[in-house]
Image 1 (cartoon, one colour):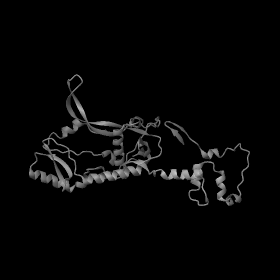
Image 2: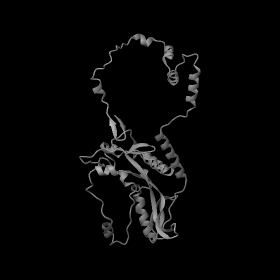
Image 3: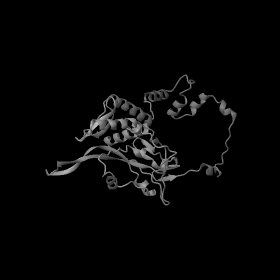
Image 4: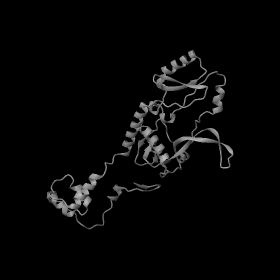
Length: 316
């Protein structure tokens, strides 16, 4: 099958061999073909590159043409082209080693919160209330250390859910058509954000490279916005705005979502959750760190999650 964006042509080899050829020529294979000296092949090779590659492992030519010698020198001068995915993985491991050697970077917290660590050397940080008493803090840390394996500080700590228990299935509407979206250009800053995210997901085997799919989505890089602050505009008027603190890679699955069936099990509303916490003096929350990656995609639907980026085509 040959595909260019949404246009595709399918070639059926088995159907082609059923139809006779109009060529009236007669072909013959004889044992003498295998006895032809390899040196005679030189007379039938017109392309210099083809001649160079054909004779690369042979030593039958005592004298080589100057064009062949020049071509060999040019080929030797080219750098070795390694697989881009392997390069991404190698760069990721190098960056992880640098991170391990450096100290943990902690964000500045408001006055009512502070950091404590579950391990020595400022490892495994958690955020607690600054007003907790010493005995309360020790009880909390004792429980957290006991169940430390259930927490995750980086994506490689996530154990995921057993696929035999639960997998994500994509159900399509009856009249949907697959959509292949082309890749979009990104500026160097956004491209680096995509590279970091792809490297991270490849390293923990959340995504894998795929050659072709009937569904291909594209990626967007959107800004991370912080709190509201006041800045002057062009007329020197103070206006509230949200400052950009970073960038995040998002996959545009809107066309895939439009073609799939609606979710009949929505998440609870925020106001309902707050009502349940109204009677308690203390409460805590857990960040669902990449929680959607802990549920494996059904193998039959993995190609439907395909996305394209400057570093290749991947699927979850």
